[in-house]
Length: 566
Image 1 (cartoon, rainbow, N blue to C red):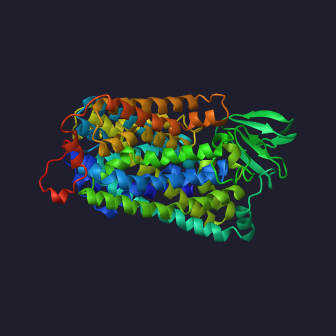
Image 2 (cartoon, rainbow, N blue to C red):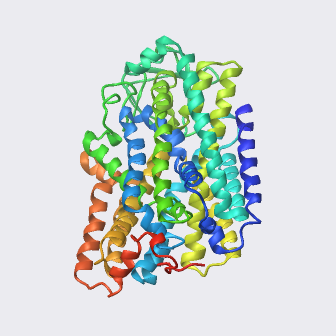
Image 3 (spheres, rainbow, N blue to C red):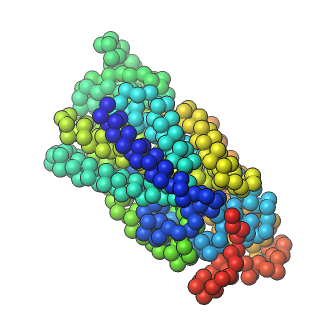
């Protein structure tokens, strides 16, 4: 219960900062981009705060327990994407004068149809990114207390929607900057404590992986999702009331919500489509997605999605519109790379310790909770409870900070890009959009946060990345080419994701290219965009519009914005 109560101060501070933003919000520009007055240091802390989501705070360590050391390629891609954004996108996006990505699309190519299509893409990316935030909030709260899963989902949705409806982007900026500092401390300090508290033997086991083949102690396992187990030998499984049953080798299906107890020394069953933690596949430095036997392709698929997808994330791009000018936007991106690099030094600690101390999470399907599960395994006294509470508070800070930015761009896409803008309409849309995301998150417990977020990156890489790169750097891009390319990328990536959700019976590289389509959907979008544009002719003002994205504002005092303003 103490861990659950640690969430209350984080939620309360979030709401109080939202109240402080009410007086400063009078226009649509105030609501969406905080009147473009955010300094680089504050902005970079806010960007880092909203970027370090559930997939970073919990998901990377959870994926390490499930998939192995290769999961560390996720933070490599997350951080490297900002370098590409720094070089190619940050300053020109700010110089466009747009409020949103769809705003930029229409301003650059004078196409209302492209603006509407871009708004739909924002909704798809926002949904894929927001649902895992709310889903993991419910999962973590239920893991550290007796609260039902839906309680954490509703608390996260309510806190985010109220904060945004009251204070808009200005409130979101201060909340995200505060929560970045908070979760950085609440992630690093427990990690250092764990390293010293576990003892020399555990540290040795963490650095020298051994396959998890037998339970070292009597171990209860609560299955969070439906799981098919492969029993390699005859296994005795007990119920919590003490009754036991003997199961022969073969398949055994465990329904979600069931709790069983494995005796000390019992053989560990394999999870269908998985590999036992600590085995040869586990400590290979490549990412074998779904254990389909093509680790190099799986690693490239994740890197392409995360690196190029970062350039197309609408909630991150909107942050650069809050900078005073293009140079400030570029400084914001540079500082963000440094801040993210500090944070991503530590998820590996939780991952390797989780493989040693709580490997049974691999069976239950709840590997996303490994970070908050570790302190109680190391110390059952007040210290373990304290660090569990701190990590729970940090996890909720991660959910809320990321959800604020995502909900803002989703609401902006609906009430600014698809419908006439208005402050009252934006506030109402925030609440309605949050309610919709909560409803989608309730049945999503079986999906990994890291997988869902990577899908969001994949859609961004397949749509907005080619649109922005070509729109900023290629004067021959036409509206027809941009629409065709974005449509091709959207249909290709989202169609592949829907097919993956149906769990088709595929193996090898076809399974990887369906589960993570970025290696083919990104080149498809670029190719279609270029080929269709070459068949047409850009308008005569296209080169001038593009040049305005690259000229330093201070050399052109008083020049008019490329995009429309509110």
